[in-house]
Length: 394
Ligand SMILES: [Zn+2]
Image (tube, rainbow, N blue to C red):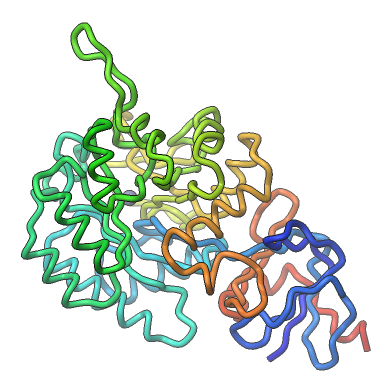
């Protein structure tokens, strides 16, 4: 099937293209062109002057649509994936938070099965923990974290083919071997829930910790111990020029000033936007039944208000937050699509609107709300909001 989207502002790697069109054949982009003449036989879609942008790459999210990946059923996985797809995420790496070994194994099995389905948006599994510094893991995960177990992680990596990213605290005994081993298997290693300072961060980077998970969250910045002052993990990550970062840009986990600072110092090519979303994201108004947490001000908090529990953001929220923080739309879009695609190693097929890539296309209105989503050429959201113009052009 041939589909042609016209009459929108198309975001390409060369910048914005007006009065052009995107041609999709089956699951691929056939052409991005500056011509909007109707092609014979194509289904025409009128974007009504809205933004036409690459589908977003979701590299860190624990749940959505009322479910969490730790439920470990194919149905839960599918419901989360569908919920985030409706908000523009067309490439998805399910994130499993700190879990026992048998659960990690089960999740890997489900993920592999989903990846074999035709036109799946799933590109691999992301594991966060359980090898985390208990001091930095937060109360919620205190029971689930443990020290690094070499036999365990090697068994998992060798027994599955879907693990693409694994987060751990670099200061734990065995962390550097863990990073070297995973890097050797082509898996992204990220530092997470850590209090490592510069010396440890530099060593960790050299061993393979090349990415910083939810930057600024669950890690210290510049601080004082007794009479002297020390850099924190945050400054150490800034000093490692090539270390990539991710920001929870839900407008709650980080203030606008810090979003701007991270963007200024790390730049578009080193900064990814993530939701780090919990089950309560993309629930479309459904109630939550968990006495431990509340939803307030667009974020999930522990019910005693002592801390945030996690985000309820979707991909479109991230772009909206960055633009509200004063960052140009094009750069915000790249940090939600291109950079995560590069960091996760899928940029040759994902992350930009270019000939030959997967037809992952999102239409955003002037308020940057998602109005239509094609995932590998399949319309997964927006049947009512766009205008099919076949008949007019005849
Ligand atoms: Zn997370």
